[in-house]
Length: 301
Image (tube, helix red, strand yellow):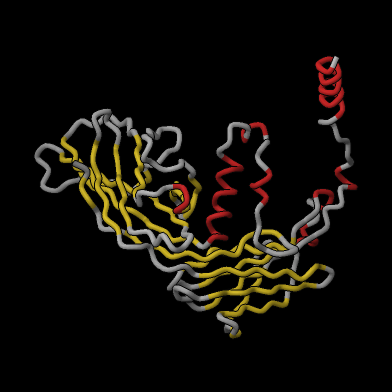
């Protein structure tokens, strides 16, 4: 009898629990302030501010115009900035470079829009590291990154791999140098039990792997990729790494991008709710800090 009741309850839930009707014009999507900024240590700071447009006003370009008031603080002190308008009605704010350890706070207000606030920090640089580049028995191009993580703190990292080729033609006095390109591709990765959690996000023109120190305990991160290229001449391949230390806000923003675009249901417009992450309080967008280190080129053996 209990089994029958449970079965009937499941049928009722399945038939009623997954349907919700709404009118998109009455969905209550109020305009909000949108902030977009990835702030790299020792680089010019750029912050873009926009006004979001409700779906039923998307054809009105005038509704996107914003003239905000704003305040940018570094370690509690006001920062000198310069602002210019943007072609799409937004505003671009520029400031000088910030350093590792700086704490940044941004407040933005505008007429008829709720004031927003966002905070982030510039993390320390990438820790001391070494890496190996090699080709494994299956023909995969491999990079094994080893670094010294601080076990007393929660840290977030990113790494992207570039490769360049010197292809030696007969009777040529110098090699041809091909344009660098990423070799990381999450559809072509081979993993072993000591490897990374394969989360990638498009960042700075690279497929960048991102991870937290909670996801690994051996301070190593292995990246592999298969390259299916037909080469006619002798080739020397070299790789270099773009290494990132990410603020927590940056890690969560990039991971939300991965979650939205790399899940099995992305092609039909579905995703986990985590892709909606934003650290802009009462607004949308992202305000994040990071540091960057670029390694020397190393030959793949």
